[in-house]
Length: 162
Image 1 (cartoon, rainbow, N blue to C red):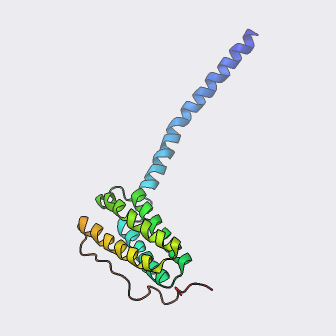
Image 2 (image 1 turned 135 degrees about the vertical axis):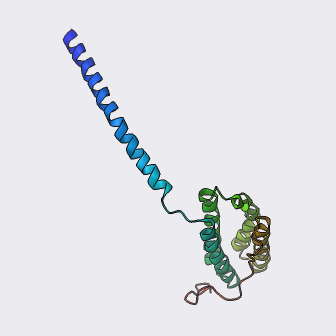
């Protein structure tokens, strides 16, 4: 019985030593993965804003054409991009101003849910104005957003599907 206990203890000690010898290799692998993550592509603030601008444009044309399904999709794309900004652009001071757009976005969402064209237009104007207020607050006043006059893409219909 003593012999079995001694062998068991020796086996456990050998296993522990084996694990200890793997630590430097595992640390090197962790360091390599950290380096890869640090150097992986992540969109910058401008890429997210350009994406939002396209969806803002498409949102307008969807809404004024009573294409509420497309309008809902576009407003959610804007929200998703704003969420991504707060996730990936924490080093940018402009990120701290993103929350000023939440209520205007919610107002547009409510108009879409209600399928209310008049409220949609009013809340969209407020949203656009708030975008510009944010740009002014973050020293990007040179970037002025307006209500779109022409669709961003000639190969997309903004009319509601019947």
